[in-house]
Image (cartoon, rainbow over all chains, first blue to last red; front, side):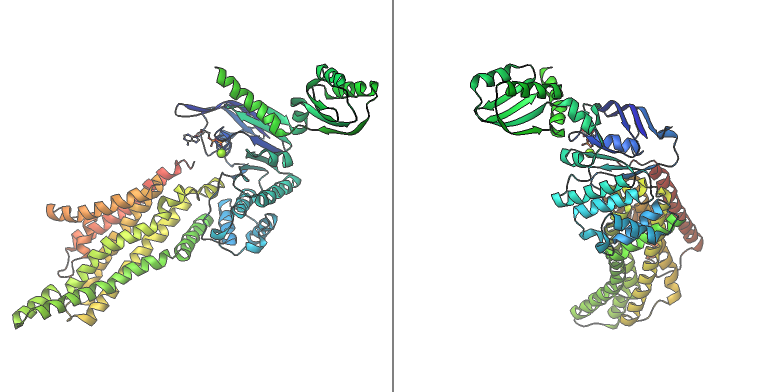
Length: 309
Length: 259
Ligand SMILES: Nc1ncnc2c1ncn2[C@@H]1O[C@H](COP(=O)(O)OP(=O)(O)O)[C@@H](O)[C@H]1O
Ligand SMILES: [Mg+2]
């Protein structure tokens, strides 16, 4: 749906994008991650045609962006501003004109406002709206004309937990409607909740891209939490020295063991040792790695590498 | 066309809902009441301080502080104080929206940049033009109540037109420069200073002929009938300047980066 290859962009001597490759598939929610200043907004501004690229290629539905006449993307820019003296309804009427909307504008406006959950504020001035409400208006603008691809730049960054939850709810709804959504953020828990795939932008390129579940499986060690009865010290040492254990933090009554790459094999090996020594396991839990761990691993590794140079 | 309509509606909403319309009318019409009263008050003061007013000095006074002084004083205040206030009120629409980035969403969604720009030119210069005409008429009405009648209503029409066109031209220039660069504040300062300098400099140099920036001189002359050829050419050139501002800003604005 969106394919970016070798994208380059510099501001003066500062190189922001350095051969970015990225692929967004139809109907997915794509979490575009990266720390502040990584170049997320720059990428999105290029994809939506607001910025010129220095090099590389952006293809949308197989067509080169630079030869497109009509843009197939609805865009919510970072920290959006509105004509805040207008009411919600008046603003959407203006937006309808902007997208040259051809249907019944009144009906469409009400539909969009229902979708973003602002029915109660439809005739209120935007000026008094909370940030969360403004972000929702922004999303409403992006989807007004019914475009299939939506790019949302940090829609939750400045919001309180409730505002974030509301925006996330709308994004889930968009996903159900079959829209393709690109969501940039540095709030990882938000992405974990709604995204199918993620890409992590760092140093001008995507360091990692893929399905969240697969990335979690492949990239971080799993931990097993145990509660046991009388785990002898020599056995703890034996587990700690086994090849499957990356780290071992056990005491007499249990604790944590981090399992290496092949989780299933490691898991089995651990329990074989416990069973052979007739240790009674009273509780057992697999702690899944979080996206945050992966993110820190990717970004942290590079930061560390930079430090040595 | 639809977008032009939406654009005009937007500018009207902005004018009405933010109190800018009220501000513009208040300053232009307010001055038209204030100036004649002020001049009348000065005349009264002078009469009081003159201990034994002889017939001749009273006559001289009514010449200095008469109806035409009051009207000329309105014309001067209208294009100095009035213009500055109007400029400040229009800063948001002339580029301020770009600075606040509230134009980004509509323009990226496909609002035609020309339609966005033309809507402004279709709303503000005519509004200012009409307000100034009204202002001169109210000023004239006020002078009729306060002074001995010296000037006929017909005689104020040409100066009023010149003043209105001059003001509208300045607003066009502000809209054009502000929107093309996204920096309204700087151009408020530049245009205002230019106005102040030009009105005096052109007068001293005698370069007033055909000069649209000297239209103000026609606009403040209520004593003698203007040279109609000079007058018409100046007005014509001012209109040309307006259209040039529209065209030029449209060309620049089309290429303008929004982020
Ligand atoms: N118009 C610009 N001119 C100069 N530098 C810019 C411009 N836009 C962005 N940058 C720089 O590019 C880098 C990436 O910015 P941005 O894309 O906004 O990052 P992100 O959205 O990931 O936080 C930043 O270091 C920023 O300072
Ligand atoms: Mg950003």
